[in-house]
Length: 198
Image 1 (cartoon, one colour):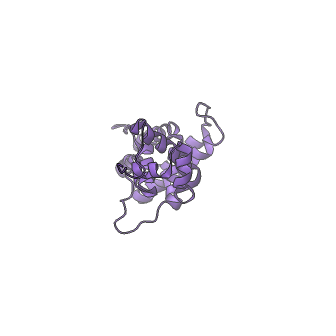
Image 2 (spheres, helix red, strand yellow; image 1 turned 180 degrees about the vertical axis):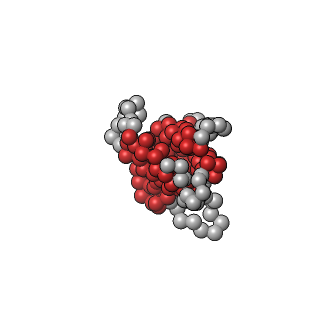
Image 3 (cartoon, rainbow, N blue to C red; image 1 turned 90 degrees about the horizontal axis):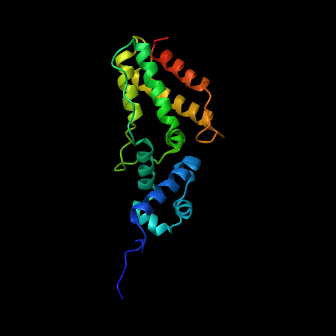
């Protein structure tokens, strides 16, 4: 009798199985966060067994990291090179707002990650690089007024505010529904204020 690896898929397309698991995990982590989502629930949602999930991702934390990386993947808009500091920051915040609207799970995942992501231990994976934070940090460092909130604090504040506003604005709306303009304008105004530009 030939011995098989535990959890190795018997048939089907492994790449499609992996995508199905990622989709199910994104839904689960966006709904319940890292702590609340279980691999058993993700596997059931993806239509696979837990051993198959572990075959593809190893463990819950690696699956979570893969979901976060997939959520922030894609072309992050670049900031304008010219214009007043306020116009440049406004343009970046509005572009990041649009980026977030196209990825409805990203804001929920980001907020839940900040609130209750996996515990950081020695040897665990480094903190996820969020390309939105990189763009915002560069822009804020370039345009921030003297005496404003320190750039790292301003980046965290703006991203948390933006993610919260996106979750609230999109809550209960379908993917093609119009999102109110007031939350976007409020995030832009707050970004201008914390950088000393308003």
